[in-house]
Image 1: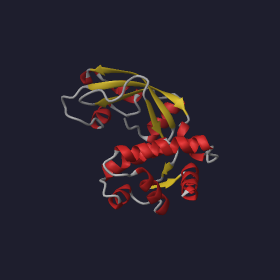
Image 2: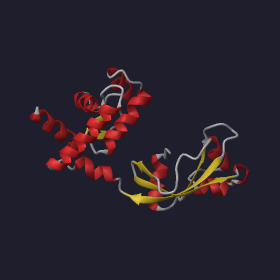
Image 3: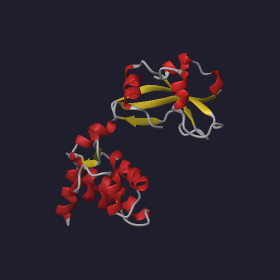
Length: 194
């Protein structure tokens, strides 16, 4: 579930507590954490609702100026269900602190190395370590261009980078990515061990 920055910031301040989405099937469940630039948004509950019953007040509560603006933002087919998603702010994104933590113990290195090795083993072709090296060599390059170097479509490459980001190894930029201090340190350790 994508949440625009302005909406995420309003959720963080508590001024918005609900969102509406049109999906063929429910895509989130209560307890889901959604990472946004404003911090973590928590899904408190999700229920199907009648889109015809929604009003301008409902739209404003979700951060939209009117019901027509809310409906205009709906994706999916016209007959798909509309979901009322109650949300709250869960705090700062824990990945932010993790990215800055480059004081890696031997156990930290072993744990992250094992995870990256497993990602490579489970894929058709190794990608995790290669992606980290590629981002180090080519920061701030479009995801589609980086993916092409590895023979991957953008829509395959981006979710893979999100998995590296979840480990605190990469950071998203306005265009492309860069390694976090944690990612830099991990690659330095790996190179020195070879």
